[in-house]
Image (cartoon, rainbow, N blue to C red; front, side, top):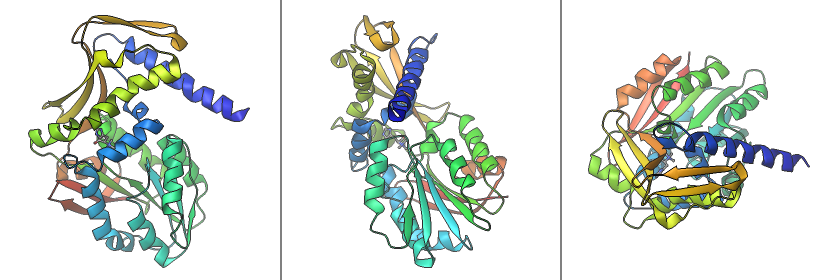
Amino acid sequence: MLTNAIAAGAVSEFAADVRAGLTKEGQKELPSKYLYDAVGSKLFEVISELPEYGLTRADERLLRAHAQEIVQQIAGDVVLCELGSGNGSKTRWILEALSRRRHTYYYPIEISPSALRTCERELADIDSVGIVGLEREYLDGLLEVAARRRLGQRILVLFLGSTIGNFSHPADANFLREIRLILQPGDSLLLGSDLEKPIRQLLDAYDDPLGVTAAFNLNLLARINRELDGDFPLAQFEHRVRFNSETRSVEMHLRSRQPQTVKIRKVRLSVRFKEGETIWTENSHKYSPPEVVRMAEGAGFRCVAQWIDWEWQFAESLLMAI
Ligand code: AVJ
């Protein structure tokens, strides 16, 4: 009964966001969090392996190289939680470094149940670790972890993979501020942020020749057809990527190849598309290293260390709540 209610809740929130995004004046849009159903999560794992998309490998290189230094900065009994853990493959280095010190609880917070299951399985072999998966929105999950904190425990929050870049500005700074409000002085946040790099390199990373990112993007329409009884003709929409130099972000869009009307029966919606009209599905902002530090300081953190991967230009910033 409860699972039906929760599932119904998730579907209705999805339905409401689809209705709002596709009936909006001007630029139609869909929140990028809906890219991550079971199919989307798997497609993102494939994207992370693509030669053109070096972000995940850069993140992993920094975590593997600096895990010991990172945990040395945080004394005492540490609770680890992660916003958007995905399959957890990058978290291993930090978790092993912490659990070598003492038994550690790890709370992966993830809205994709399939990714959460993979994460729990992926990290189950590490000794002296208790994994408690939370299928929640980021801040709801963080509130739960904070509520379970025992006296004297410090919280280390991982927000990796430059998911922060999916928030347009200033929503990214506001999100850091909301995290800070839940934490206590002495807690910390490890933030992964992709950095500015040649536009050609970015466009290749988000529009790979194999078409995996195109499938990842189009899957959002397939998901509406599956879950909301839509009749999006996938072949009549195409994946488009552009670099917005004003916001210094890569934007993913789905472009209508012709004038057409799409029905989404579960939302009793009929949406008209002009030829060439797009749905904006994701924003990926590219930062400069000092910009990340400024944003963190504005949200109530002090940057105690920042490591940069120059092969792909990616930054890992350790931020202490002050
Ligand atoms: C997982 C959100 C960081 O924005 O680079 C990959 C998702 N989108 N290819 C990103 C993504 C297109 C990725 N993040």
